[in-house]
Length: 486
Image (tube, one colour):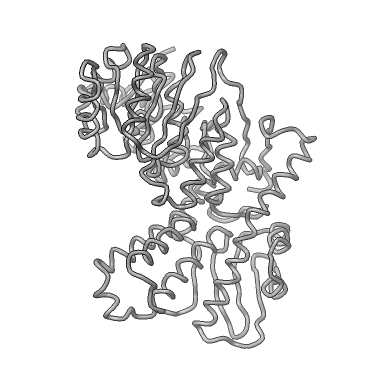
């Protein structure tokens, strides 16, 4: 059996040689980064694809993975699955199993969440150095590394300190990481390049500065860089000022602090799903593009391909408001990008816009409402919204069962009583034909109520599955994918 590891520190000639060996089937097991999914890599007879750290793969990589699924067995691994992936597991669209037993002799990592203080940083590092350990110091941006280096060199003049980030030359980065692994470097100042793949047992303290700029999964992975042996490890998470953090950011940090026991990645992912939402809802039957591109990629593409709002409202922004904005086109582009990400990002964008420029004029409010409608529709699996006379129609992939669960959880009777479900569509008969702007408001309010019912839906579905499994706890779940649901 011939094995080979492929990574970016190899020479061009070595890479070319391995590409030829892969093409002719001379290698049995190939270990590498997402470059193995590139167009230049041609496999002779690929039988199994194992994807580690699944949450870090983007749309293009998932598209390539999806293309393998008809002929190749695919196993994806993740300590902290993204909300969409977790939703797929909870609802049975994907076979999933959970390993929650930590390695022997591991102890939980003590997590400390507090406002940034140089004194606390020095104290935490001194504690680790005094017991003979090493320290990770992580920042979200490269530009802050040198400043921290200068501060730590003044605080610890006799300690070996180094910087590591992804834009360094490969050889320099490799030498730095090797020295840190060997214990020659005591403090490593770095970006999240150390997020995964490192197992340095003597490094048992990690300092993470400006934690509000990291995702929950990133923080969980970074915290996991320490505590790799039987010694108690410490993770110090520093934020600049609580008043600068959104409620959602605080909730994420509190979730990380609470999920401190070993093997709690799944529980943390559940919390993340509860905070951010879980992406796009589908019914029990999957049709159309899902079968062609794979459900993961379909979720990624969903916002672009659906949520077609066939209501022609294109208000012009007042010239005085345009002049007031520093860069109006960039702001509109940012709004669209926020909407493509998730509803919480769009809400955060709206809040920041109002904080900086005040309450938006009515025409800007209409533009934002259209984005909110498209985003909420995407989350609900609605592919198109249209109006004909007094009738509003929403084409959807939702099943009748899911429609009933969502509408039963709606707080208001006004919209619930007006909605009816027909195969592939949700319809509402209004009392009279509304002007376009009032119609947009009605659709916005209706979708907002439907969207607000999603947390209740996921709880019902989760409780139903627990009952079906005989009341077994989440850590023992094993969900079977229903082939007839594809």
